[in-house]
Length: 248
Ligand SMILES: CC(C)(COP(=O)(O)OP(=O)(O)OC[C@H]1O[C@@H](n2cnc3c(N)ncnc32)[C@H](O)[C@@H]1OP(=O)(O)O)[C@@H](O)C(=O)NCCC(=O)NCCS
Image (cartoon, rainbow, N blue to C red):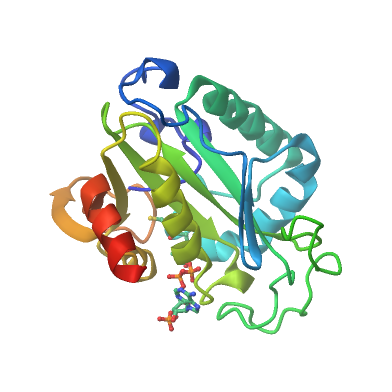
């Protein structure tokens, strides 16, 4: 089961203490990922305290969309809950066990998403681009994270996207950017994306990036719509390099 918020959900916490990044094998690669990743029209950035109100809004606007699949989406989120989550996830970043990014689009992104369902276009803020080309002014379009819970040489990617931003490739693009980042970290040879077999929209993301299905593991449902059978999608450093070379 893949979720980007294990700091708040004990069932998906790492089963073992992760080695600090500085102690992992690997030479000449950065020990920590960048705090900000700028793609055309989409910025991934480490969350800060000021993001909390917008994050609570995004989560609550997306509640019905998240509830079937995210074990932690059991009711409306509060500022206090998100403050605790933020503290935990920032600590995890410093410890090298989890790197969670907010997704921000330069257009605010509320129009055009498949789940928009008539919500007003534009979202929060006016949209536009910062001096560095990064997205500013949009609401929070979701989160994506790297999680150290698969063993010493692997990281797992988890994601959720605001209901009004779905169907635009945001999860795919964000997961692609984090695959690149993860495989550039010391000692990381493999990245996995895990999702329940019933979660077709999530399962469509990894093959778009060239991940292949390693297997399906039986387990117990963690969220209301899950069947409890977890697909393991995998990408290795070697396969990613080959893919990048083919795309170049
Ligand atoms: C699963 C989830 C993250 C998918 O988010 P998403 O941003 O819609 O997913 P994608 O990035 O795959 O978007 C793909 C769609 O955008 C379109 N798209 C547009 N531009 C694209 C681009 N540059 N790259 C890829 N797809 C693009 C695709 O054609 C596709 O459309 P389709 O659905 O008609 O096939 C989202 O539905 C969600 O948050 N679900 C609830 C939480 C959840 O299940 N999380 C995962 C738990 S394992």
